[in-house]
Length: 165
Image (cartoon, rainbow, N blue to C red):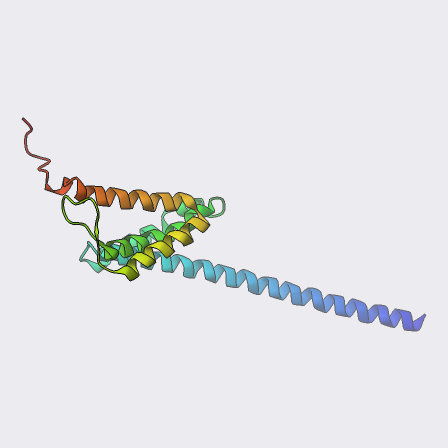
């Protein structure tokens, strides 16, 4: 009986130690996941900043644009339910790579390719996005079509404030 109870005590001690180790690992995983979420938000903000730098000269306004893109209340409110909002991080990168890939002459239907590496980057970003969330992919395709149509239809040359006859 003494041998059995000694084994029982050793088993309980091992089980207690294992439970504490699992609890410690769970805390570490939670901390790592939280720091990972903070780092991901920071990187999303950097992407928004880089996109804003293309058109805005003030670095403070670009920083504000990146912050709003990363930490908008619309995204943060739906953080736990709508994971498709997490995959909007590819949008600023796609827009930058798309504008680097193509040149759009006024009035021409097909764009000129500036960089085939950037075209491959657009394709890879599109593939990554379709594997995660196809809604975002269609948004990127609609942007591409609208941007190309702006130059194809010569909408930038119209005088919108002039009177029509």
